[in-house]
Image 1 (tube, rainbow, N blue to C red):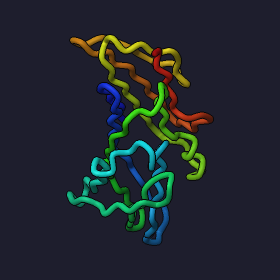
Image 2 (image 1 turned 90 degrees about the vertical axis):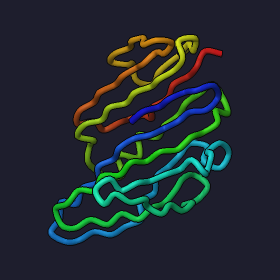
Image 3 (image 1 turned 120 degrees about the vertical axis):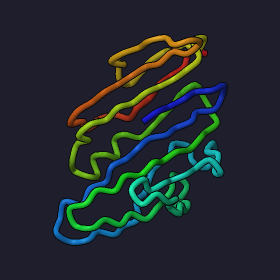
Length: 161
């Protein structure tokens, strides 16, 4: 999962693995929450792509808080989706929902988060301290790697204004 902050726009992109561990096919509509969805999300920027089937997935507005997209899995199969969107920042806070993981009743086996900012962007606080931070050119890159991760709080970064 990558968060790239350029000016006042946050670009979010990640690869998600969805597994069906049962002997029956599974079909559902997956709700994907996005903070300040109606206020700040650049709707044309939302894409969901099925990496195994190599095709885009139709996305609909679920409600005022996120998107819906179909998810179909054969028994004992895994789907791999790339999800990407951009948002205008409405405040000094970046917020990505993690606590919704609890609805699956299973921790994330492996989660990698990366925040990329310009060097001149200062961070006031993180909800999770980064495991690593380094500079590359005029960028600062913060990394988090978690295993068997059941988040008790969301991923929140407060910028120094």
